[in-house]
Image (tube, rainbow, N blue to C red; front, side, top):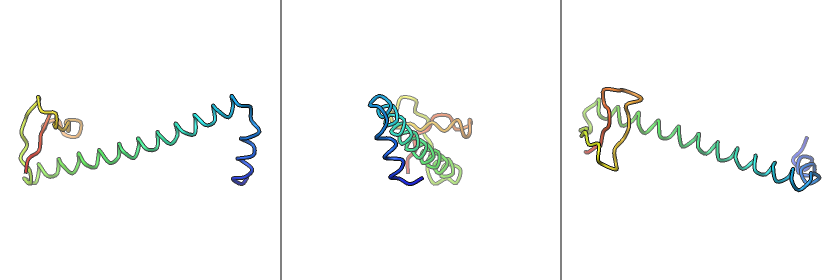
Length: 85
């Protein structure tokens, strides 16, 4: 089946079905984007944990700071951290 076949079949749907199809396609794009962002965030957290373990940064426990980083799901011994160079 080609793109033109799929597009033609989609255009042949009723307005309600085309709307549902469009909504599902858009949601699938949002889900993919969120998965990519989730993966990038995990990579960043892992990088920061490694920096703490190597002594590159000094962790400061500060539960009131808006820039805190939650890494306890990777290593509960760190808890809530803010990183400084």
